[in-house]
Image (tube, rainbow, N blue to C red):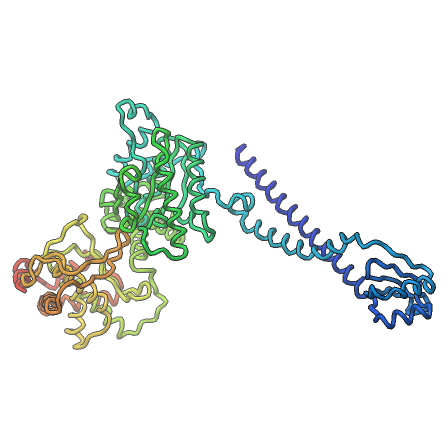
Length: 631
């Protein structure tokens, strides 16, 4: 409570100081403008007669006052002549007779030394001072977020989480059990360093957490600090990058100084690839500044040892582009992969997040976890939050399984778009298309069980969807299973062709996915008897980013033709199999489509009931696959 009061007081004090500074500068600027205005008006009220006019006025005794300073003459006319205005002019030094004429005809004539030039200089530099002051004031306001003024521009932006705050512990982290076991050593070292030092060992200076976005790298680093109860300095790699030269390296040095003052502690560098990219011999523009920052980081990592109680933990999802100097022993000694959670990990993550919401009795989290393969920890947290928001929006007292189902579909395909007016013909095409997928997937045994079919438009590209529910996570797939997947993808196109004797563009995504699987079978997995056990093409994959990049061909044109033929044969064979299944069970196809048009959504049990009533027969995968693999 006292800390909150102090922070609030300090914040109000800082705001008062900022307002005070702004007011002072406004007063200075206004005063300067007034002085310049007065000076300008004074200049405008002074006449500048010619030398001949001045001589005539002197002889006619029309001048009341004249002061000569060097060759500059200032004076004042008589009150009855030109209303007594002031004047100024430059007189030639060689006209000596003029001095005696002025003494005779001007009552008040004085000569002064020309040594008082300070007012002129002051008035000339006031505009410059005003401009410089205004620029400095705006620059200091711009840099205020970095620190208290421009002198702290090179200071580290690391955020400190200390013991007084509520920490995250390993109990809050699920789905990464192996990583937690490996990082437990860090916790034990920070708690009891002598346990490791008595045998002459040392902890790794740095640990690099690698994995896809959202898998809990940052959360795991905070949990280490929470378990060890030590200060936690967190900073992103992008915080070192600035447009000013030398700022990044300065911030790196300041970060390590701050860490040594707070030792034992943990330094967490998020998005390390922002400053740790591979150094190239071609240096251009800002790239050179980034290399200076990386060099400073390398030097600082060599300049301390773990006996001081400082552990560096970094996170990245692009380890493939990191500089080798970062990854060598003595810097980031240990590299820990944090992958997407498996089924048991997803169940644990769901339990952690569901502990914060009101969950309905009987909600099967295992069923939810089975329906979310490939989801990261962040995706699952978002799924739970979306489910709670949906339940609240519908006025429910707790979150039910239906809320999880709908939220999962929303995350995968997009929100339902019931407001779209779909033409009746388009609805029929979509219904038969999805019915074709559902029928084929239900009747072939080598694929995952059918879960749900819908013809409700979702997102921006889906008029319908067919979903399977895996029994378990799969890390390998056989050729039989892959051919079954392609067959299921062809079911929608085959149904359109049989029923309407025509085809639509609704199969574009199915064809894309089928082509990708077939290409991987031929080029990378050695599943083509004709091509053989050869890997063809250099796959430019972006690690942990769920992007495949592109395949660079390193084979001849004749081999490329053979690859295309093999891919075509695989897809055509699967297409023929799907066509055979649907033709034999055309009655079941019509029933599924009719029910979809009426109900819009059918689950797996309803599909099974329709197929059983139609007396459809499941196809043996082995016999059909044997025919398909002879390609």
